[in-house]
Image 1 (cartoon, rainbow, N blue to C red):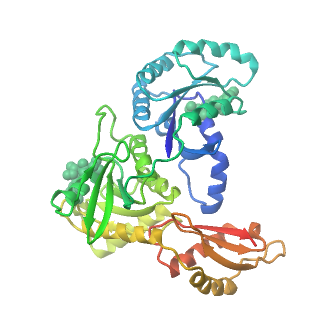
Image 2: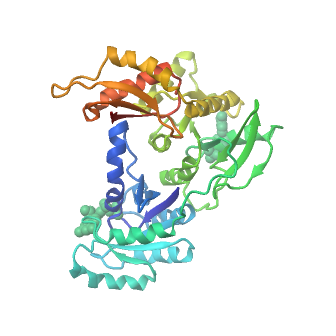
Image 3: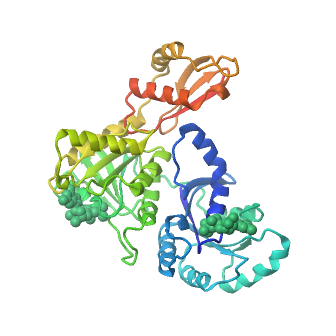
Length: 434
Ligand code: GDP
Ligand code: GDP
């Protein structure tokens, strides 16, 4: 999927614009899964073309007194990672020094740039917008993120330059993406697997532009490992920028089947790791969590592993059915277990439950615990089936789908997980009219 980044200095309206594009879809997705969202990354579509939108400003902290250097990094990353860039400026403030600075960086890049002059809420402001021609961009649009005017023209032109359809990967091999924050141990993990292993077949440089794929063969199971850590072109980029790890992960995650999320157990499963977790979840990817550097964790009796695990699962609520493997890449502890787990998750994600089996299991459960009556009406679920999506999704056919509320959906999801192994895999449950 194409990635579009929105850059610009604080307060020009980037997040307002982002929300406008994402909201309609979000509303639908949220209703299904009810989980917390990353407010700076989402999917949008226009004229039938889907793309990922990233509000880069959202990842930079202290947005009011932001340093110019931070903006520079943001812009450089956007240039590296995105397929197209929306450069947003504010007609109220006119061209500022920082706008000129950003423009200079963007003009040097070869990426398509769309200059969005925001807050042109009324025709009377169109004149003021003319001064932005000085920035020297061909594609210039007067927009209002608040009332939506002009955004259609911008999106029309934007989606025109996005590739028509995803180029299919050359190989049909399962793709495992190793992601996480900087210094979590991703490269070490991959090196440990690859370094001494005779089973490696080839190195394929970049099926996706910025990650390295390695074809890997073990126990008769072949897959591509996607390394997001390998390349660090820009030493200028401050490594602990949240934006950095998320941006780096987006493409790898979108293109993989299973996400191997590595984090440093001495630092904990923090908000930034969580962001990557939700990125994987909302893309319906399989997930394995690796708690690395377990050798450094002092107090390791079995009790503390359980405690630690419990804590991680709390962070992942409500998607708690995820394998967590405690590893030490340094001591080569459980790294193959980690890969075996990823293979299992891959299989869970590709699983197709036969309609007959599904109904045999689920209908008696539904009979015993039907959806609660709503407005004195009873929901009758007749049958269910797994849909032919690349990840598990299920349709339950009933008379009044609109009366089935989230708690009951979660109940159904839990029962599906209890009876069929979907560990590590987000599943979607729909109720449809029959
Ligand atoms: P960001 O820091 O670039 O993400 O900017 P925000 O989206 O937070 O917007 C900054 C301020 O500009 C907020 O008070 C918005 O309500 C306001 N704003 C955003 N878009 C528009 C617009 O199209 N017209 C007007 N008049 N105000 C806007
Ligand atoms: P990346 O940025 O995620 O690719 O992380 P690296 O693989 O470069 O690892 C960051 C640092 O953590 C390096 O100094 C590694 O030697 C160290 N490291 C990686 N795995 C382990 C581990 O299991 N135990 C310990 N003690 N250190 C580790």
